Image (cartoon, helix red, strand yellow):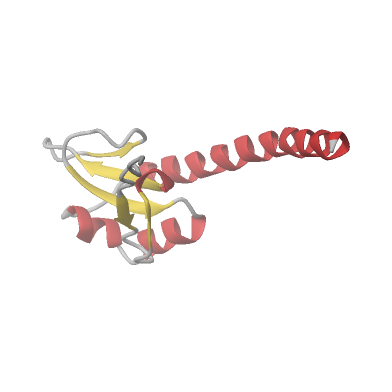
Length: 112
């Protein structure tokens, strides 16, 4: 019998919803005190997770949720810009892949 692989679950600091670790964006306060977006989720330091949605990022900025979660005085504006551009790049990549998936699905339906 195969054992099911453990999937780490994390909570968004903005909306408090839980999701798989890979579905959230991780922001890290490095030991030196600077903040950084952690795309791979492996950087050392105190981390906080945010949903990959514009709504959660803007609420996080407005209500200073990252400041509280990471225990810092201020989060730089460039970090929020980095998160928003990361989301828009992911959306563009997904929209470019979908037509290919739809075409493949249409082909497979014709074969059946």
